[in-house]
Amino acid sequence: MKVVCVGHSTFDTTLPVKEYPTENIKYRLDHHIECGGGPASNGAYLLAKWGMDTTIASVIGDDYYGDQIIESFKKVEADITYLEKMPNHMTTSSYIIANMSNGSRTILSSKDESVRKLSKSLCIPADVILIDGEHPESAHELLDSNPRALSVLDAGRLNDDTKALGKKVTYLVCSKDFAEEFAEEKIDIGNLESLTNIYNKLKEYFETNIVITLEAAGSYTEINGVGQIIPSISVKALDSTGAGDIFHGAFTYFIANGYSLYDTIKFSSITSAISVTRIGSRYSIPLLDEVINYDTAI
Image (cartoon, rainbow, N blue to C red; front, side, top):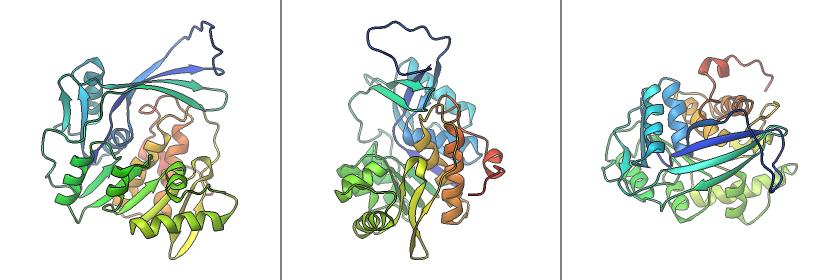
């Protein structure tokens, strides 16, 4: 199967700290982690690492960060034909404070103006598509050229572009924030009726398969007409950077390879949970065998 991922690429610098910094104090760290990042970009990296024929379509700058992103994709043998170095464009860079005491992360990003369309046409063959809403015109072009492809939208942020793309994909896998903003209603994880109501609003509008990710609480979806929470696994989190991106990449892998929706979410949750026990989004992606053989009662 040919997989094409369209979306945002960043270069991440992660600073692991024992506790959240206090203002106006100098800290000295014994190490930091540098690697590529970005939702569909991290998903593409996982898919290539797990052995799928993967193309990344994204915009980077003609700079040091862009070069590092290219080299990282070469290491997993991803197709970088559509990883476009754009003159006068600055690669998005993110500085991540990873609080090792509780696994939270604070992200400071420097992002150039968004690019809606790549210079190269994405009227290319694809069996599987993963998009995150970045470069929306190119994403539409790819989806329209491959109406029979299995497609996944990593819907992290609600805007007109993600709403339009969400109507074209096979699976809309959205964040809790996306679902709440769309439904104009807060999710009460302890109240299944609340989740069902928000899910139905999404289903009615997008008319496709919906999965709502609930971070540590797992994911909510409908299987055989019954709404249910598919739980995640309990781990000691060190760095949650990229965990959502990794979930979406794993979701794309498992659903494309014929797993049931339940098992797809189960194994994607395991993948994401393993990742938060490690530092740095790309470095935290487990091997496929680690996920499949994970000893869990989920």
